[in-house]
Structures are given as structure tokens and as C-alpha cells.
Length: 474
Image (tube, rainbow, N blue to C red; front, side, top):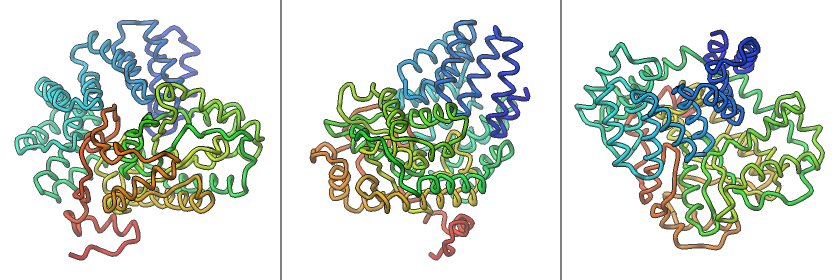
């Protein structure tokens, strides 16, 4: 229980230490292995989480929660076929495991089967009206408008005694989307504030500590490193940026090329750096200065080994984990031939889009000041690296893409040293799995109506103030 409390506060090392102490006393307890797997996943160690959860499933095959948690971790590791099998196992053991059923519906949505996914979400809601994940899955389809009747059901679901805090958060985000669809912007913002407040009661983003950490990373790489001697990384394109900045759109454009596969949000780069941190017994970036060219090459080869699956059909792949902007220095050292595309979007639009989105494990999105601080840290990091290595780090503008699609798409392809191909202009016709909040949007032609802040007007002045912008003027 103490491990769980530490985890809820974001104190992952303490949580893992407590749980391992418990496991040392009861090494054959499947529930303990299940809990350790969940805690490892929350700490970002998906490999360790999957190993612990598989052990729990082997020890107690009838434990539906272990199969569900395994499905979640496999999904986050972009191992979607294995995830579907684990989630199906959870549902077969516990047919009323609504979150597992909602995750299966998410997989349908990711595969482009929107109508079937919506039908699954509606079926779950009919059986369990308080199921937050089903409501949010429905709302997150973007292209589907929620109705007045949906608003009434959502408001009732918030009062349901069965609704957990997780349910209430998800329902709140869905309610905000429904109010937004109806043009009731003050009510939408209130619903968002209440949903985000639930999350902030459990854990507050350490804004100053995070910013200090970003400064430490930049300082660590300020003096050029002795990079890997081999030109590793030609086969990978990293797409980084804030969430909701157009990273999925860039991946979809590139994955429409005959030479490129879109891998999605891979956890492999943080995992490789985590392995080195455990080996060095120091957190990143404190071990960076002691690395030799051979060490960096070892890390680069390890990353390419872990991601070999994505080069089976096409020679180049896109790693689109947005938060990898924090590791650009490490990428440059271990994979010096890799391309890195940093996605930018108007700061106000980008931050508000994050605030409106139910994002897993992105706790800086709960508060306007935290959001503004995070955006500034991203901004200074991308400016630092695009100035130092413009031949390998490209700043890409979402607004410029909307204004001049062909020009910007050709620019992306040129930067990646890819010959122009017409399907990249018709990226919305490309059929592939997309696991991100933009899954449905990137299957449509470019839209010029994605900006939302003007509708909210002065209601967003607190966010403008946090970003150092003047107040709203009609």
C-alpha cells in the first residue's frame, strides 16, 4: 500500500523500492508481481513491466487484472497484436472488465475501424454508464460530435457512486468535448478545470525541478561530445515535440513514402538510456560526460537492435515519441546520422490542446503555469539543437504546413533525403495503425479549422498570461 501511495505522488524510485521489499517476503504472490509490473510501467520501464506481468499471468492464469495490465504495457510498447491477445484474455476471464473492453475498442479505432469502435464504446456505456474510458474513447474520436443527450448522460455519470477518480477525470474531459461541440465554451472550460483538479490532488508537477533538469541536460551536451565513430542512424527519423503539435501528422506524411514505416511512439530510446543509467548507477545526463565514442556506439547499436522489427518491410522508420526532444543530445551522440524533426505549433493553441486532452502520464498538462513552463523548456531545447546541428535537426511548423502543404511536405522529404513521392501529399489515404489522439484526423485531408482558442476568447487569458502573451482582443 505504501508503494501505491508513492506511485500516486510520482515518487517512482520509492514506490519500486517498497514493492521489491514486499516481493522479497512473498516472491510467489502473483498479485505482488502484478503490482510491481504496474509500478514499473508508471515509472516508464515497459520492458520490466511486461516481464513482471507475464510472470503474474504465468503464476495465476485466471488473474484478469494481470492480463489487462499486460495488455496496457504491450500497447504502450507498440506491440499491438500481443496487446490485443492479452486484453481478449482479460475480457474472457472477466466479461464485465469495462476498461479492458474499452482498450479493445481503442485498438479498433487505431486500426481505422471508427464505426466499430464507436459501437463498442456505446455498448460499454449502456452496461456501465460511469465507464470513463468508454466515454473518453467516444469523445476522442474527434470527428464524432456528442449530443445534448450525451451531455445529460455524462453529467449523470459524474454523480454515479461507482465512478472512480479515473472515471471522473475521463468523463470530465468527455463532457468538455461535448460542451465544446455545442459551443458552450465556459462550461467546457469549467469541466476541464474540474477534471484536471482531480489529477492535481494526487500529484503536482515539479515544474522548477523539471526545468532544472532540462538545464542540466543542455549543459551536459554544451561541449560537443565524442560521438559514435560509425555513422549510425541513417535508418531512423525521430519526430519530437509537444503533444498535440502535429507529430502524428508528420509521421503520417513520412509513412506514406514507399521507403518509410511509421512505428509510432516507441519507448526504446528512453529504455536504452535507462539501461545505461542502471549500469552507471547515475541518472541521465550525469553519466554522459564519461562516455567514450565506443560507449555511444554501443548505445546506438542497442537502440537499432531493439527497433529492428520496424525495418523488416521498409529501410527507414519513424520513431514518434514526442518527449524525445529531451534526449536530442543523446540521439546526436549515439546515432549521429539520424534525422530529428522538431514539431512546432502556435504556443497558445498547443498548450490549450494539451489541457483539453486526456494525456497519460503528462501531469504538466493539468495547470496553465505548468504548461507554460513545460513549453518554454521545449522551446529552448529545440532552439539550442536546431542552431547547433541544422543539418540533422529541423524545426517544422504546423501552421506553415496548413498554409503551404506541398512546399512543407517537400521540405520534410528533402531534409530526410527522400525522393518526392505523390502519396505523401495524399497522406490521408494511407492505411496504417495510428495510436495517438490524432488517429482519426490524420485519415482526413488537412483542415484549416483546428485552432480553438479564438472561440474561448478572454476565458483563456490566464493561459495567455502564463505564456507571457497580451490579453484577448476581439
